[in-house]
Image 1 (cartoon, rainbow over the protein chains, first blue to last red):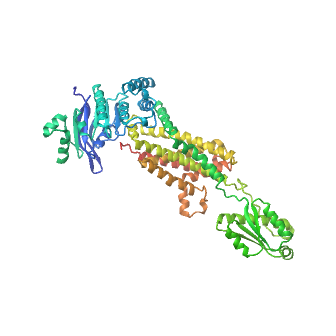
Image 2 (cartoon, rainbow over the protein chains, first blue to last red):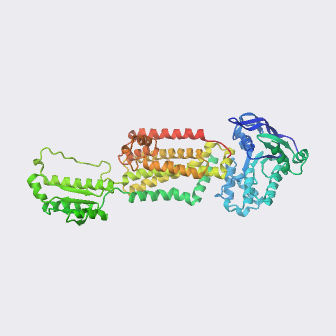
Length: 243
Length: 368
């Protein structure tokens, strides 16, 4: 894999009053990588992700996303990233096509482009018949796939996935990860937070946050070797307990 | 601009695909207006009365006839004794009893005075008050008719004229009040719900991460409601005018412009509410409890502000509907122009600016 950093974070600190949510984070994410961002609830994942998405400013330190500075170029950052959350964020009372058109529209895509890409996408997802179906009548797995496709519809350089597989069955999760691989192969950098430690194994590299710091960052294989355990789950428990 | 258009179209889909929203937007205003217009009325028509005539002479029968032919009263019963008075009231049907003293005509001719007693059922104080006022008015006119002026050189005659609403129609008051209330309801309630709904569904975070600016998101969300509220304002005015005969004396353009201003005030208030909370339920509670009740009670819509305790009067000054109601009454009923309502207009503009500033300060861009 080529090692061009697309996200560089240096000594990033975010404080809320006296509470330090992100304590001196330093890491790189490389282009086309699937980067797992792990941590218990309240470890500071969401805070860090907000800063990387250009939604909030760090207290100190540097962060550069897709070549843009988080202090100065939040507009440009937003144009170059995609985002999908646990809630899938599709409008239930709009049809499949209306959702795609709306989200593509706010990223400034032309109508003709939208129409062509939609046809390809629905064909790929085998949703051709469902173009005019309301989202609320689709099964959860389809919604999830569609939400991911919508998040990368405008060809972002990086896509942020915030616990994207919450509440979905294992088979659908597996299929979903296939989509993530496919996107990564096309050069999209995937930044994903998850609670499922088996999913951490699918990532190229993972970072584990404990109490606002990055306690470990390496490939899943190296982490397991280093801590002399069999699964990522054990790595996580070891790190979380030692704090 | 194209992004914005897409946003507004999406918002219209939300509105028209949700039956409840459509009902709130269009059903409730019309139902409320008709209800208030027809049901809540403080006019008197065919009130049941009894008469205890102890004199039964030509004057009392003439006066009785005059009272009964006024259209306000209907004779339920003639009484024969004082004991019947209490009984009649207890049955509850009779609201007022008129008693002529014995030898009514004779006394009047001999002494120049005669007595009539009016007893009203004051378990409904407002009705009682109005009934006695109406009765006294009729009796006064009557006594003036039979007494030539010359006999009483120093008599002062009052002639009352109810300017701007000669028939004292209640609906004149309700149409402006309902308009204020409904525009408040639709604008503030609907915008605060629709914004908090995006927060609840998690779509708001996706919008915030997109290149859209927060201000574009907000304007995109409220634009449909500005349009729909404006249509509602026109419908209310039309119903008021054609169904209830409430006149529009002043400039319609000024009236509509002031309505748009009030809609904007209510919308900014709705935005403020949605900035303060993340849940639809709380937004709805705040809108209903904190906006609806004061709009009804403290705006001068039903209860006159001048009669309230001083503290409440101050509170009334903080209510946007109070100013709006004053404006539309002045324009609709009195036919006055902008030079009579510019102060109220300024107050509303000031309130709107205040809500915008606070909302912008409170608007938290966050991923929760």
